[in-house]
Length: 356
Ligand SMILES: [Zn+2]
Image (cartoon, rainbow, N blue to C red; front, side, top):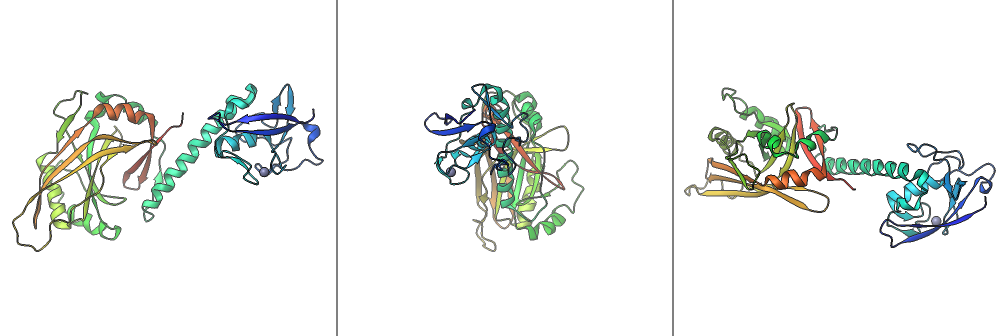
């Protein structure tokens, strides 16, 4: 078999690149190493793709491919995988186009295996990106990525399962240096039976409040109010610690100990009330959308409102929440949830969309 010209086309169908595929007789002696695999052409396989040392073209076995740009020889399957993951640019000289190669260009004998391998690699790359993004937020604490919570996603399809297990997470934002003191102060009174404890989270301290819906139906919107004694617990924390900001999360607590954040609010500043002023306390309302991110857009899952008196004391009058069940159960299932665990329990999550 001598050199065979093939045209490889991008997924979008708009870009193409001509490649020269060659059989064993086109290899040098000894064969060159593929610059991608760093192993000899003709014998190296792509890890995870069985029988990938050659690519079948018109009944012949190709074990080398050359690009028109710099003439460097590559392993055919390794180059196809590289093109699908990183776009159709030459790994050596960067000539070509950045759009990914279509698996349809590959012979049917290996198309599925290569596409499956590429899908796994893409997921892995996304997972790594998500972890890096998260690590950027806070490098001080020991975060361990937990397995993808695919089972939770399946449960989240059904509102009947979801609503009894929802909790509202209240986060008071503060520098890591003040967290331990704050926890010591706030958790000193363990006599409040049935009330949650404050614990550390990546941006300060948080607690998880039980919620009860007025109606369990799926039709939007659904409302719940946080119980008075739980509001008092937050009042005391706001008054003692005077945190600069607060945020909320809507969380799904499964039967085990894990809690998955489904949606979160933005961080709302609380500094309007000046300490030491003698003016009468004013009622203020913190209001924020609860959203989650898919790759394309931000999805609104509900709204949270906290009314409080903004004086020297910060008494919380009420926390109410309105959620949109359909948006949660229909949109969230298209993503996968990444959970990150702290030694004290589940800490934070990011939602990453699958690429079909
Ligand atoms: Zn090149």
